Length: 285
Image 1: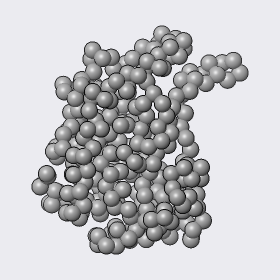
Image 2 (image 1 turned 90 degrees about the vertical axis):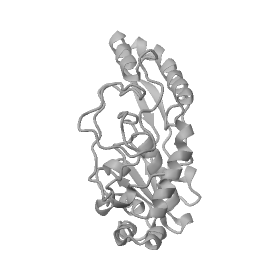
Image 3 (image 1 turned 30 degrees about the vertical axis):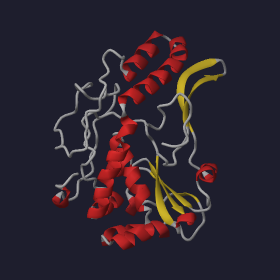
Image 4 (image 1 turned 45 degrees about the horizontal axis):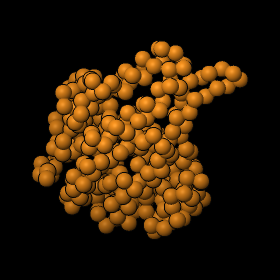
């Protein structure tokens, strides 16, 4: 989808002769990552972990200006609700695509919904405008009934969705991205990864293999079409079941979504793959 994201694969770890099992091997979001994805890797990179922009202070890379000054400028722009001011500080088109993919993959633990697991890069090649980078994508597709057009309450998302033109662009982006979620394409990719891992998992013991099968859902029990659509849904008062007829399976042990407080729905009434689904490491989500 063209969004910079860390490369991810699996690794079997053996330490001093002890088999520690299968682990996820993930690329660090550091200077090397910036050099791979950006023409100008000398911008400021911030680590968003459990905080919204107005509490974002941890600068991982870059030495441009006082730490947090560029973030404060973005926060002030979002609070003005002025599209021109927001567009001066944020790459709005890239952020709309970022939001669409987070919502469509059910990434409840990311920025758009959860104020968590994101990086913020101020790209000198984009006149210093901010670009969101996804992170911590281990909870995707965990809520079959997740609403993808529910208004998020995070600062940047609320500011962008408060502009009717940008809301319409978001809905259009969702429509454009729907082919990426074709079960005929997604499920074989998931099965290919499971097939590649199965021999190594089996060697770690029958319990591990049973757990892996439960987590990925067998072909016989796995539904074949997404439960969500491009229409707003009311919030469900209870946790969705492990499988929903016509929906995706819920991985074993996954949690229900934690929703940020939504902003007003007044103007929302008019409504018009994955990071690591391939058997080989991917550079872009």
